[in-house]
Image (tube, rainbow, N blue to C red; front, side, top):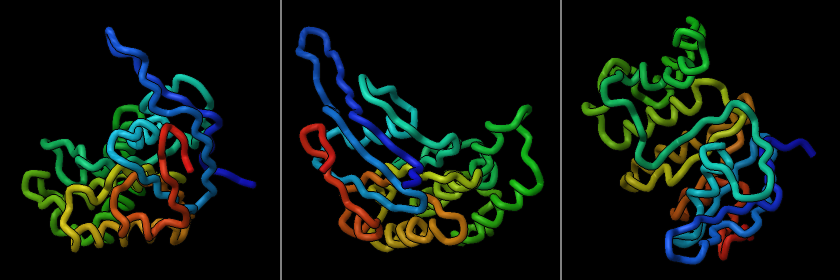
Amino acid sequence: MEIVLGTIDVKKSFKIPRHPRIEVLKGVNLTVKPGEKVAIIGRSGAGKSTLLNILGGLEKPTGGTVTRPENIGFVFQSYHLMPELTVLENVLLPAMARRVGGTVSPETRARALELIGQVGLSARAHHLPAELSGGEMQRVALCRALVTNPSLVLADEPTGNLDRLTGAEILKVLGDLSRGKPVALVMVTHSPEAAAICDRVLTLENGILH
C-alpha cells in the first residue's frame, strides 16, 4: 500500500523540574494514503497539537519513527502571517524559503495568484494582514500551505477562531484538496463539522490513537 505519511510507535514525553516525567504520546501508529483526509479528535491537553508537530517535523519524538514527505503544507489556528508582508508575499513565503536568494519563478507567482483567486481574495492580494478579517487571514494561510504543491497538508484547528459561516468556507477549501493532484490532509479539530469532511476520524486518548 502506498502511503504519504506513516508512524510506528511514536512516543513523546516531557520532563518538568521537580515533577515526574509526563508521557503525552505512548505509542502512536498511523498511516495516511495519498489524497486521504484524516481527522484527529480528543480532549484538550491530550497531545493532538504535539502529535501534529511531530508529524510535520517541528518537534522530535522521544521514541518511534515517522516517515513523511519532504514537501508539507501547514495551516495553523492562529494564521501566523507576517504582518509586514502583503497577502501575495505571505502566500509566496514557503516557495521563497525553498529557493536560493529567496526568489520565485513566474510559474510559482502565477500559482499563488491563482490560489488567492480561488479563495476569493484577488482584490486583497496587495493588502496587509491587518486589513483582513479572521476568515480572510485563514484563507491566506491555506493558500500559503498549498503554494508549493505539497502531497500532505497538516492543519491544527483550522476553523477554531472562525464563526460558523466562515469556518464552512474554509472546510470547503480543505474538502476540495484532492481535486487534481491528490493532497492528503491530517487535521486536528474539536469541530464535528470539520471532522465530517474527512475519510477517517481518529481519537487520541491516553496517548494512543484509536
